[in-house]
Image (tube, rainbow, N blue to C red):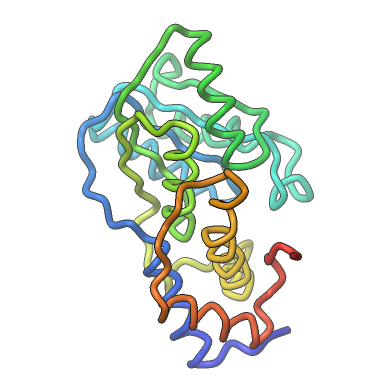
Length: 218
């Protein structure tokens, strides 16, 4: 198990900050929450609806790599239940519960909207904090003509880890996501995102320190 030193925390903070897009929330046609193991994404999506930023909430997610081993209920269904408990009307919610990755989140939701004869133009995408940038890059690849605002639970890096999502796991995943931002455009999965040299340097140092569990094997 890699040690969590002050150097590691400093390097990880750099990745955390890079993954954030810092978009300003604006009124939109729908809120599109991408499923995951982090239920705080559902709370953020419901909060935005209740504040009046959009009239529709879409929850997308089946059981992915990080949830299929621990959950039996699809991510989107759990997210929708949270939203209803918070006061979001059921008729303001659409659920797509078959997707297993970010690309499928978008493609399966496209199909769902087509079936409902809905064509929202501006989306507020809600995702985990360290997946804002990758979600943006994936969305723009598959749905480039749409307007996009990306947000996440409003939590600092220091406050983000939980017993279910410990700090070490967060760093492993952030490192893997940065690698995907670099590699996925060539595979046709995402649009290109510039990675500053100091961010890639921080990534390489974290990998050398053992934070490689979420990397794609090349």
